[in-house]
Structures are given as C-alpha cells and as structure tokens.
Length: 67
Image 1 (cartoon, rainbow, N blue to C red):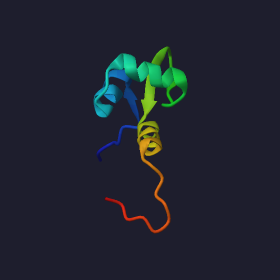
Image 2: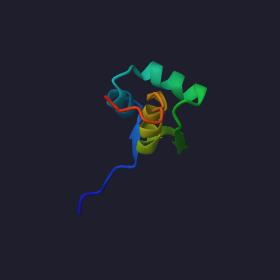
Image 3: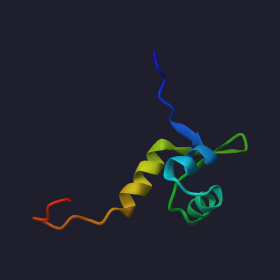
Image 4: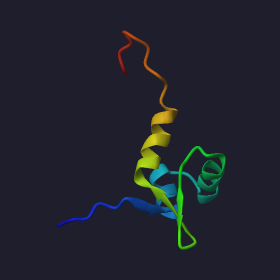
C-alpha cells in the first residue's frame, strides 16, 4: 500500500510552489498559506497549497470559457 503524504516540510512546500522558503514563511505569516506546528516543527498541509493556488486563479465569469 502506498501512503499519500498529507503534510510537507516548509522546504518541500516551497519547492512545490517554486518559491523561496522565506517567501513561503511570508505567506504563512500573512495567513495566505495555512500551516500547522507539530512538536515544534512547521508543516504545510498539501490541501493548503491547493487552496492557495486556487485563491490565485481569477474567478470565472458566467459564460466565460477557460483558456
């Protein structure tokens, strides 16, 4: 059975978004990206990356065709 990872380290999450660790910490600090602390270690839920990316996408207008 292959386990799906639910949490990423900050460096892993930053690589996934193709941004620096410091930029990711900025996004976490501003609340744009959710994160959790487990035993002092910061982790980013995979779903938080999906939610952040979705928030960057412009809202589609009724009748508009996605490019």
